[in-house]
Length: 93
Image (cartoon, rainbow, N blue to C red):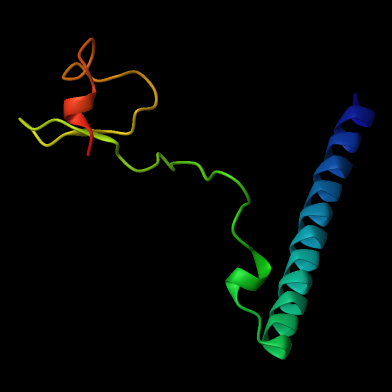
């Protein structure tokens, strides 16, 4: 049973050493990145350009408006109750 306890103690020591080495490597990487950014005058848009294609949350421009409430709908997805089953031409924006 002492071998098991010894191995657990060694594992704890190694885990602590791994965590310290990771933290040191991360700090070095951040320092290097900051130095390059400062040296070359980089901006966030240089490093992280906008995603190509559709972005999440982009729903498009509204095509239909409810004259009674002012609510709008893009024409995509499930139609709202105020336009569902009706002729959509009078609601066009």
